[in-house]
Amino acid sequence: MNRILFFILLLVAGSLIGYNLTQVDYNDPFNGQSTVALICIVAALCAIVLLVIFMISKKIQKKIKE
Image (cartoon, rainbow, N blue to C red; front, side):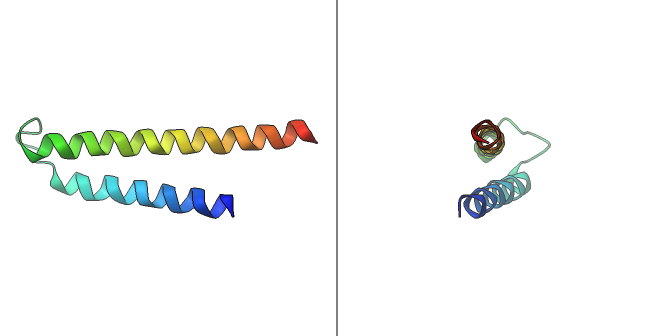
């Protein structure tokens, strides 16, 4: 159950990155809506990193118990 939830959350974060990449104005990325899109991209990347760290810690915890 937990593994399915992690993969769903990873998929959502990845799709948020993809969507926000389309919202960035590459000629002026730090102005207007592009700034919001860049912040959302960074937030989604942080969420992915945290989920991966949590998955690795769960694997380590499982190995320690064995």
